[in-house]
Image (cartoon, rainbow, N blue to C red):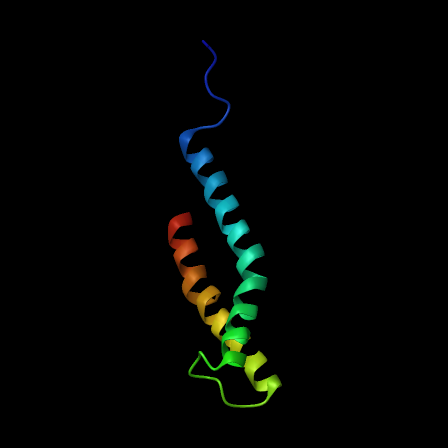
Length: 80
């Protein structure tokens, strides 16, 4: 009880934030393109026309938009 904590509050926050980002990238990196592609197959998306390859590319592009520069910029601001 008299020992100081091994990690500071800032270090704990950084570890938890990194773990949350990692979980999001691992799960949604695979799940999000599949969800978008499935919506296109059912006609529930505005990008429902085109070949299977075009739908797959659109699903990956939408996911890159969500997890690309915008998310990376947010993480960089939090890191500062």
